[in-house]
Length: 498
Ligand code: NAD
Image (cartoon, rainbow, N blue to C red):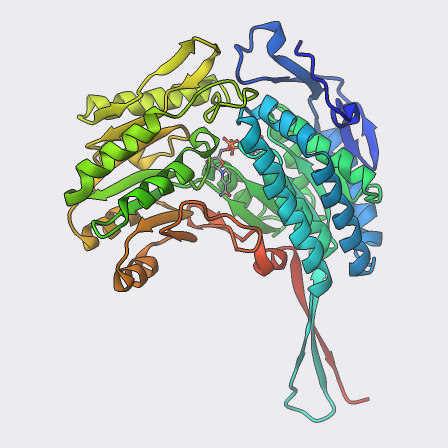
């Protein structure tokens, strides 16, 4: 087993967090957590074991959240804000430990993991501030003596289900607005990365969250439906907030129909990145490097299809391939690494399948294109940062998210053509384009079917901006003032003549 030393060892938890207590799973089953840098068959790949939860654990968490909601919703907003501010300060104080946990269980390089801590913390700070600004409205009445008022109230108990690629940021940006609004949370983090979520719960405990306000139940992939189904079936869970794949999001939407829950679904993407001939090519290369290769390409807003106008295609491809070939790949804990291991065997196999399919159908390999092993890479989950050119719409990676360090380059001729290609996907999370022509900028920005558009910018996420998609990328927004609305409902009060 890997020996993990943290400066605060209490952040490494091996229990569910339910009703303010650290409790064993009622079924007594364990979920092993592995370091993705190593072959999971090797004993030192095991980082820790957490409970493999079941329906009884999910019910206990739900009961605790329901009881806590009665008290939390009526706490003055300022008190809820202060609890979130304490939580935020604790995250910053423990950022090195949190970064170590993230990089160890998820595989992103340490510096990037620290960036994730700060990014996740920024949402907590933002919603701590927003908590005190939940305004209602007075509506002018058509009848004298009548008063018409609009109030915002917390929706109730929220179930949060999160993916492995940002084990801290994804859950922080759900819990923070929920608690700010006055909701209580039952959370189920991804099976590959439960340790960071438990560490966050520990910091919530230290921040003085009342028992039951935040509950975390861990579970394996097999046991996850048993846990989540309890929450889906309960009329007391009023909202599901989910980040993950589109099929699971669709399942959650269907299963929420009977109890008509509110839903926020942050689902998969298939982001286009367009380089027009009037772009600053060096800036566009920087944009691809920032947007595509963060987290080894395992990001929902990663460009999955890079369209380059024919006259600049050769120059762009050369510049990009040179940058990508120089990306250092290595274990997440080594300071020099910029690309760590992929999350698991399934992920590497998908990348291999996509690249092989593209090559078989005529794509050209500019750099990379293979698994990496040996010379300091002591595990089976490393994949070389790759650039493919001559990619065409019949290749699998055009339709599906590759979720790895692969940049596929397409060639296009006209603006109309590339907009049609960019929108030719069921998804609509992020899109990017580079151009220095102001007229084109406004035309293209409005024509792209996407929740987020980066214009001459590859790093778009911010706690102050609404994050979310359209079409099969889901609905609901996280961050910004819009992010709080998803956890509130609107109540209309009509007072007659007194
Ligand atoms: P996933 O959908 O397989 O898993 C996400 C979560 O859902 C995990 O906690 C998992 O245990 C849970 N889950 C799985 N089956 C379930 C079921 N039957 N009932 C309830 N919960 C279930 O996704 P993943 O592979 O972990 O994450 C990658 C996906 O997430 C990609 O498609 C990526 O684009 C997407 N993503 C989207 C955003 C966004 O903001 N839109 C952000 C990050 C990742």
